[in-house]
Length: 333
Ligand SMILES: [Fe+2]
Image 1 (cartoon, rainbow, N blue to C red):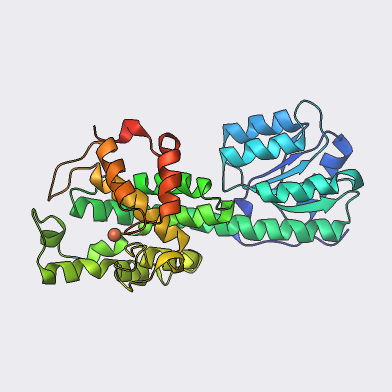
Image 2: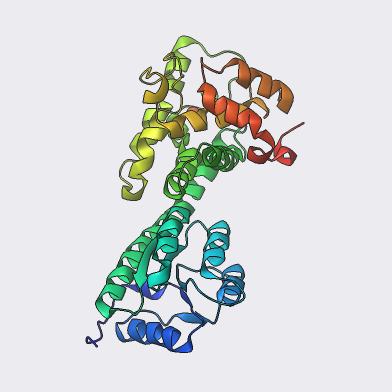
């Protein structure tokens, strides 16, 4: 066994690790290796069900799970775990017979797998990758608190934006799921959708809240907000994958949008998704220039915009899966 490494980074100690294995010796081995290497002491679960109970009770960063377990096997545990938290980093431990299953599970949110019996160095290398991901997510979560404060400032400035960003974010993730985006892409879509209008902080309140049509110079001001959103988020390293989708959220599928007039699939898919759910939420909310529309009327308008303002394929998915994408109880009726 290698000498213990003293980790001084407080973020590591904050990591919560759950280990699920039905063999007591295997659980204890994982626990011993981690503790000796200076990792936080993991919590041990004797099967999938026990692990699931823990996952439901509180926040976890890393799950290390065996596949072959009584009561609930690792495969079902993984499927349930990703439903509970998209932020969870999952490592599967597997014997020779279940490598294929482990690889399959990589598509369902498992980030790595380790062959049994453990090679200590390989195990630690895998845990190191998991830690790296978990720490990133930790930082993103911290960032999210900053972002939420920023959004609260923005939404208080524009009295018609109340709750808009978080609704758009939820709707975008649902539509993104139907569009086949993977777990990682969905995470960044969530942030892009939440933050797309942050640049409005730089637009004068009188313009944001103006009743009636905007004149040309006012519209020019509004058109600067996607660029300002990108500039505000630019220095935040973890949001880098969001910058392009934020910047292009007012492009139209037929190339008549702004800021760049990009056409069709050259517009990032995340931007095309945000564009639809953003428009839907705007239409069904009170705005300075008009009252709210009913959901049916908003849907008709979105359908009319297919191929012009919106990506027709995404509009089809939006309409087909409308009740799963939109929480109608939240829509002003
Ligand atoms: Fe916008």
